[in-house]
Every structure is written in C-alpha cells, then in structure tokens.
Length: 249
Ligand code: SF4
Image 1: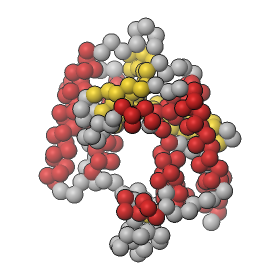
Image 2: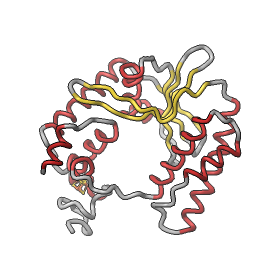
Image 3: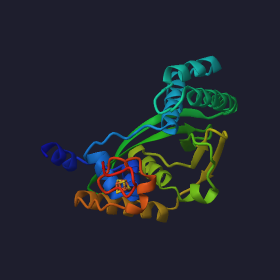
Image 4: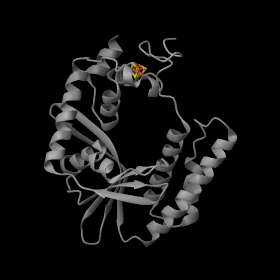
C-alpha cells in the first residue's frame, strides 16, 4: 500500500503510459501501479532487438556493415518466440532489414546526433518523459526526428499524420531538447521506408490537452475498465475484470 502510494505520488506521464491508459485505464493501473509483468511477444522482442542494435551501431560511429551485424548478434533477444523456427525466421528477417538499412544509411549525408535519446520535461504540473529513437542533423543545419517501427505493415499517410507519439516527440524537441524538428518521420524498417509528416501548433496543443486530461485522471485514480478492449489486451488472462473466457483467474 505504501509502495503504491509512493508510485502514485511520483508518477510520470509518457506516450506509452498515456497510450496504455487510453486503451484501458485499468490496464494502466495493472502495468504502472500494480507492476504486473507485461508478457513479451515475438514482435516486442524483435522490436527491442532492432532498437538496441541501431543504438549500439550509431553510438560507435563505426560505419561498417560487419560491425552492424555484430551489434545485432550482441543485441539479439530470444524471449517471446514460441518455436525455434519462429525465432530463426525473425532472425533472418532482421538481417535483411539491417542490410537494407545499412545501404540507405551509407548514402545519407546526415549526422546522427542521438539514438534512443531520453528526455525529461513537464506538461503542466506533471513530469513528462520519453525516448526518441533517432535525431539527425542535415548539412544545412536542419533537424530530422524519427520514430522506428519494426512491424511488417506500413501505415497510411493519414495514420502517420495523426500519430500521437510524433506529436509528443515534436513537443519534446522544442520544450526539452531546445530545437525545432524541421522534419518528422516514421521509419518503417521492414520496408526501409520513411513516411514524413509535420505538426501544427494546433495539433501540439491538442496532444498536450489530451496528456493533461489523462494525467489528471491518473492523479484521481480513475481506472475504469474498458471492457471493449479485453479481447486485445495482454493482461486478459490475469485481469479480474477481463471478459475473456480464460481471464478472471
Ligand atoms: S483485460 Fe480488459 S479490463 Fe482488464 S486491463 Fe485488459 S482491457 Fe482492461
């Protein structure tokens, strides 16, 4: 009880936390207050591996393909896969992704300033934290902010234009890191394709209003279950409100 009180007093908001709350407020409580283990899937594990690989690769500024593959070996996480064959297929897919990534990166004239850049800011009276996947600087002095996606599907332009995480990235660049994000994109690594977008002041204002609304509800411990999401929820076996047959253990 004391621990829960402390966690609540010191709570921070982030895109992941807001996203969890918007999915189902009770999911937020299970994950971020009760500390329930978030089961790893193959996709989560694979995504973590690729993020870690690119972070290690760019940290050394060693533009060598064999070094990139070494970073991949060092970063590989084998949890979340259901069979050895599934693990192997993801592993091979990762090598193909990195081959294409390296080819594109080698031709690029940008400087990678940061990978997995943490920021610490405020929204209203609330602490606002997050991690930006990559920030590049172009020779003309402009900045590009990118979010890696590792799933196979590419989003539509409309989905990228409305993505809440990119709005928070743009806010954080201005308010925590001190620069204007001239270019904002989602980098779909599986397809080696970037989709660019931009954010208007009105979109940023809407994102901040939403963050504040969620933060106030968390502050007030309003964790009403959203039962419409149970079928898609990672906690549906353990949650006492779950409407799934296997739930309510
Ligand atoms: S199982 Fe349903 S009620 Fe429980 S956290 Fe998930 S979505 Fe919310």
